[in-house]
Image (cartoon, rainbow, N blue to C red):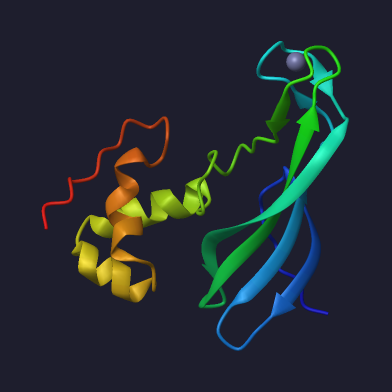
Length: 145
Ligand SMILES: [Zn+2]
């Protein structure tokens, strides 16, 4: 069976779904241990989890969506609850960092409206790119509608 190479080593693909107009991949982080951001202790005590839908680079001309399992842990040491973090997806974001970079580069040489239309993403997704990628210092033009 055909399989999508995700090329994001932190994730394991647990399920792939090929639809007419997009590809869905259910992924989980490889590591079951997470470091508590409050006290620094490692925890593998999963408290609960949720799924975040994340847009990634297109594959075979189809938009790729990741259904990312995001575990929440309860720290043994300080009892705080915290979420898993990912190298390739910033906290709260619904696009992978590489997809956000890709949108940024597409904006060089075409208009935001064109990028929005070609990639079938919301205008505001492109515009909000002024935080993309998080640590590269790249800046987007401000929304001047
Ligand atoms: Zn802690």
